[in-house]
Length: 149
Image 1: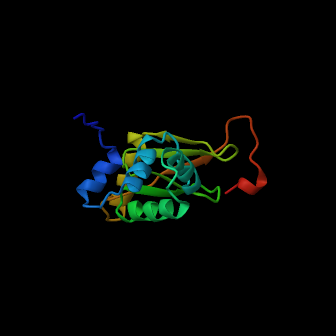
Image 2: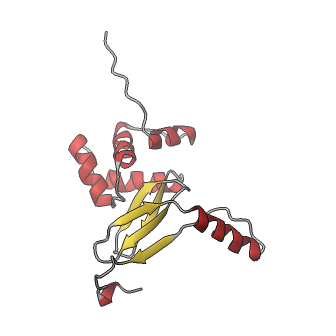
Image 3: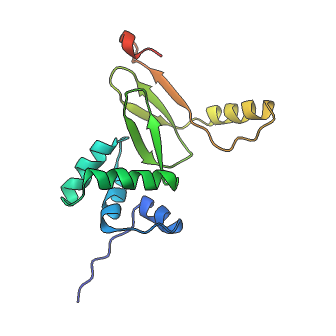
């Protein structure tokens, strides 16, 4: 008898640690999210998951995304483009959002982290969590008036 062993995705491991029940459809959605190199919205997750398992419905994706978000396994972002976008929960990076293209670049800045910790401390707080998002346009391009913040 031959068994196919597949490694668990990072999100599947987090779900197991949190005691979440993993159906095959949730596994597929979790793998799609773990393998994403972008910040997909629910429709994009649905399209990718449905290519793997055509039985997955958009309702299942919505329910699973809510479950994963409520369990702090994934983070929901609003980058100002009217779509909720998702990624695996991680504390080690920030986002630079291009207002023209919608492209989201991830970056790490130890200086920004230290500054946020300093600001919290100046006000008598210990930094527990933070989000740092920068919105901009590439040099030489114009920002559409409707996208200015």
